[in-house]
Image 1 (cartoon, helix red, strand yellow):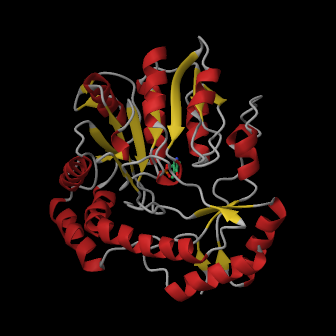
Image 2 (cartoon, rainbow, N blue to C red):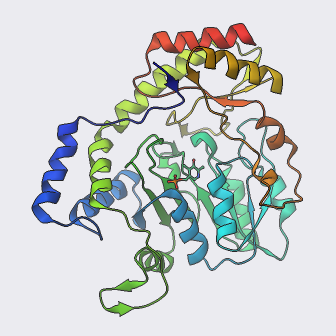
Image 3 (tube, rainbow, N blue to C red):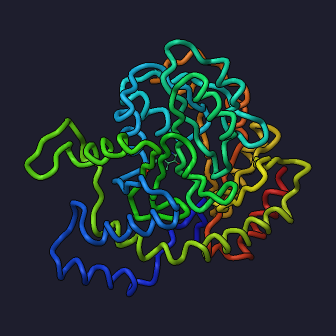
Length: 359
Ligand SMILES: *Cc1c(COP(=O)(O)O)cnc(C)c1O
């Protein structure tokens, strides 16, 4: 059996079925239905955050953020993230300006962000890469000093916390993805959170075509999600804690047995941080070694992921002149190793052995 970088968690079928019975009873399939409202209330409670919206995916959440903040200029962002972080900026007719990342956590480097600020800068969009927190204090300071919002793509951060607060609760706006591959998922889905109440009301309108019943207020988009997706969220949420605990066991096995003289694992320096064990990324010494590791794992039907690859400033359609040596080097040497709750320990040991023998 092939082993992929992740395997989506599914709750016991009967627990999902219970919500389906409610849908068949109500015939309410989408448009802010009762199951969605229940999920939103649970997530608000879990995150301890009031201005929270459940949306159709994490990418639309980023686009809604840019649209609602009325950004149309330069956004300073990270070259080391999933492509959606950059493409949402382009899709909303803004210009991504790339500031390189730190060596230790591969998150955007606040000093380099500061160096990229000009009168054209309208926002900062950073990613909590692998669920490790950005330097939120420094970024917030820059945001305040320059009077620009800080947006976090917190797609990896659900279940992680910093100083007793969900990592999703940091920033002027923060978005999350509940895609099937994430720690907590609703098959497809996402969320957007913001500090400002007015902005929140605007986002709520934008999510649903800009109208409420027969009152047409503004131009919006369809960012809603369905009762079926919400049901998956409600069925999955009770398993979050135990899934994170199981991910932790796998991660600790890698920690114990991988040969760290020959590879490097990104880590957070923040104190008061609790990880969600979303990913297990490792960075090898050279491009050649990385390719060899991929090949040797593949021979054993094991498929890690080049996550992230490529460096976003190098995408052909971005046309960026920014130079980001750290990101551009790491993307050729990084692999996310298989990590999911029911990954068997024999398989973890096999992966470790193959890697240690190759490097
Ligand atoms: C998954 C992911 C997204 C996109 O989320 P979708 O829900 O798939 O649209 C955006 N940014 C990052 C960093 C991601 O990992």
